[in-house]
Length: 265
Image (cartoon, rainbow, N blue to C red; front, side, top):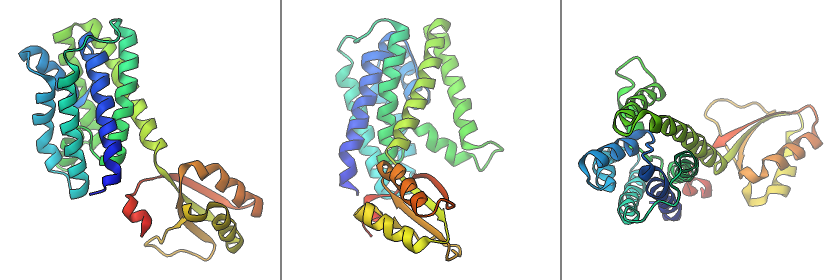
């Protein structure tokens, strides 16, 4: 297991639980996924939301394809479930629904983004969608959207349609917050085409040092193509180095996720 990732997973679980119990749930605001369903069931049954979070998510987390990631996800789930129970007795920090929706979903989204980045799974609905999308004519994203529409509709019936509007707003903010956190923490993969690659390679190695990780794509690569990964903070510097050497070079970069063990190999 990647123990270096564990503190980030636990921090993500802490932020998620904090956003839920200190902002969203006390104000009747529900986000999507198992978290939203757990909030509704907690309200109906008066049982701790942490119990529903754990038992509803666990079967899907155990179905994860990667053992290391599965262990991290389950640890994150345990921490999240326990912390929601710990935070529950405390009064909400904000009792204004619109403001609580924004602040809580922003914090929750950062937490979810951290868990996704370092554990790979933050909600059982995502795994469920990935498991069944091959059996029906819908993508995993479409399945998740439909499930969340149902959950947010149920929240409208239980908490009122005024609260449902805040829930939709919170859901959208949480998605953007999680997405930004997830991509911001990723390394960047670069694909460069140039007739001056030897000079570019030398310049990149001199500037990036140990943060320059060459890739070997499975398909054939021409003598004028270069694939490598570096830390996100170096992205602007890479463009400057390449274009300073060859102003006509073609550069493409995108988020790239891989484990620390893979990076060291």
